[in-house]
Image 1 (cartoon, rainbow, N blue to C red):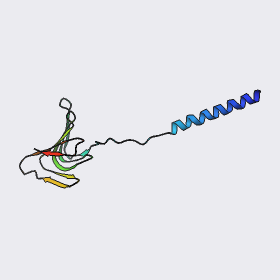
Image 2: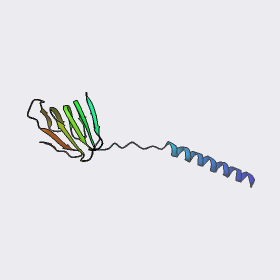
Image 3: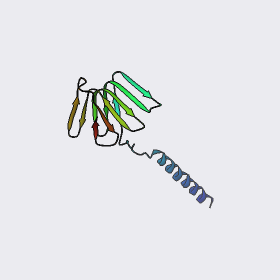
Image 4: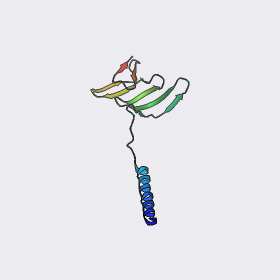
Length: 122
């Protein structure tokens, strides 16, 4: 009877260790957010905590899930309104083609709400 108890105890410990090790090895694939933004710029990254904005200047490149903004003079990201404002010259790539505005042209800016598939020139 004592041998049977010892072998049951060994079996229980072995199974417990296998389960414990197996649980530590379990992993999940990382889920990327749909509205992920990546950006780069040559000159300045300025963050205004009061207004909730990030301002990028000088040859700014910014990529979203829908648009890719390239060579922009200035881009302002608003965390509060979840909008992107592209100011000055820029090039925008989207599904249907490319939109370009030169720095010397009439000053209009492009407004894009993060997550939408439409941008507005104002």
